[in-house]
Amino acid sequence: MPASRHRAAGLLRHVGRTPLVDITPDPPLPPGTRVLAKLESVNPGASIKDRPASRIITRALVEGRLDGGRSLLDSSSGNAGIAYSIFGAAYGVPVTLVIPGNASRERLDRIAAHGARVIATDPIEGYDFAITEAKRLARECPDRYWYANQYANDNNWLAHYETTGVEILEQTRARAGGPPDAFVCGVGTGGTFTGVGRRLREASPDVHLAVVIPEIFPGIEGLKPLGSAEDIVPEILDETLIDERIPLTSEQALQTARRLARCGLFVGPSSGAYVHAAIALARRGEFRTVVTTLNDTGERYGSTGMWQQELEPDRQRAVSGGTGG
Image (cartoon, rainbow, N blue to C red; front, side):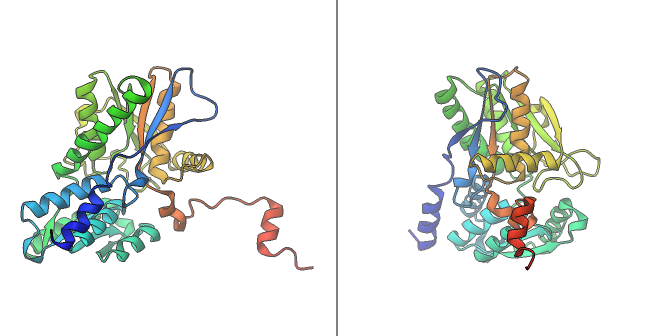
């Protein structure tokens, strides 16, 4: 086995099979009700995007789409970009990523560490502009790039259908005695919702499938509000699965993520959004077991100011060196 394939195989063995953890909000949930979440930060790239990215690049290699030194090209808000860069480095495949310029510094640094090339777009243009720019590059330079297009690549949702959804069913049955009554997540590419949703609905036709809908501005990194005609709706998103759309604000997502950190779960804002919505579903008393995903690690958001808290006056004085005296 070539060294690159050996390296990649070692990483691939550690993608998925993530733990399912209990979320215990305060005040408590109704008796007999629980919220469970997949802790995806334990993947090699510390996010749920390792699942589809590893499958996309592996299938592309098998199909010869990256022959001749072509670079894998895609747009990303950061986590998929990290996953592509990790597996690209392992396989020896060049990776080019189109990313909005307001992506967190931690994500950009991680991508750079693995040797991927980043093309930053104007944050004011929004995330959909990064998609448009990636499509333009692919169209104008077909011999240089293979466009992975995670928004339309079936390997994206299939990764979740064959792994995430299966794991949720197995783990929920072991923990709660049956399949989940409800599943909630957001829509970035639509891969998680479509893949998990299809798998869960096959196992339990009555499962309630909900998506979180963030406010348009300032929004939540990686999640689409899908609230206007201008939004690019991912091709792989199966909207027929959606039973409910749950609106929330970025502040609700951030506050929930901060509360999770105080409970030992260090996650990003999209995970906060998912848990906020999952708890809201559980509090209605209609669903015995509600499942969601914790998408990545909170360590990717330090530079955004997400974890900065107002200090108490005495503590503030101590940090600033006191009054001088």
